[in-house]
Image 1 (cartoon, rainbow, N blue to C red):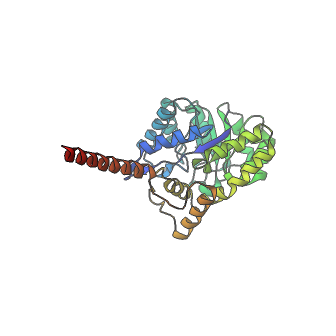
Image 2: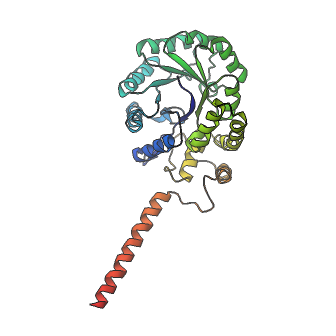
Image 3: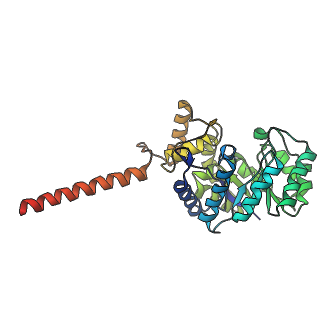
Amino acid sequence: MFKGSIVAIITPFRDGKVDEDAFRELIEFQIEGGTSAIVPCGTTGESATLSIEEHNTVIDIVVDAVKKRVPIIAGTGGNSTSEAIELTEHAKKSGVDATLQVTPYYNRPSQEGLFRHFKTIADAVPLPQVLYNVPGRTGVNMLPETVARLAELPDVVAIKEASGNLGQMAEIMSLAGDKITLLSGDDNLTLPVLAIGGKGVISVAANIAPRDTADMIKAWEEGDVDRSRGLFFKLFPLCQAMFYETNPVPVKTALALMGKVEEEFRLPMSPMARTNRERLEKALKNYGLIYGLRIKNFKKFYISSLSIYLKMYTLYHLRIIKCQC
């Protein structure tokens, strides 16, 4: 049902609020870059620091901006089953195509607890569900046997696997590969995941390099393994740079350096350490995403410079006309 390059899109902020204008521009950047689907309010979207009202607003903005051009998989998970249901109900009413449901964090449920959590959400809100396993963030690992049980539910259609354990992913494919779509949750493992039967990636790096990420998977789908592998290794240093510090700090910093958003985070997320920022800048320059002269917001700089030029040009010609009179 879902495949290709699926971006885990950031949530841009300005002066403490969601920057809707920048957000809409990022969505256009993704669609123009060949992104297959968009995931708002995931880990990369700083969902943990969004209020429920903001969370719902972000999803509404994406639905309105996308206008059915690509699928939307809304992050509506939580460590409270009832809250996850509440968020999912709003997302469905808003018009999303599916929901991304993370394993409950901090309270670390058993495998039976995980099964009941996801099943309860599916029963309460009929909507295609993408499971999200990221034990490094949540403190709990959803085992392949549990995934296979959940794959029997009609609305459980895919899993974003971010355990980093390729053997575990292969076991999921062995147990339930005919019933559930495997999506890489780690840009660094996209090609190996494709090789064991995965269909794509929910990507952080696609925020800044959507075209290459999309083309890598398209090449694999078309059987052009050499081109796919070439793009994977081209992207690889950039993918590593996205985790110089905790996601989404590096990718958001990168987008700010590219002039697309303000470099603004919500605590406890904070700006990158100087040495890591310098490493990130080097990676972006090597990839051709930024250049030696860096202007924080080139678009604003250009408009401001043009305005000043037009004013000077007008004053100059008015002076000539006055002199001629």
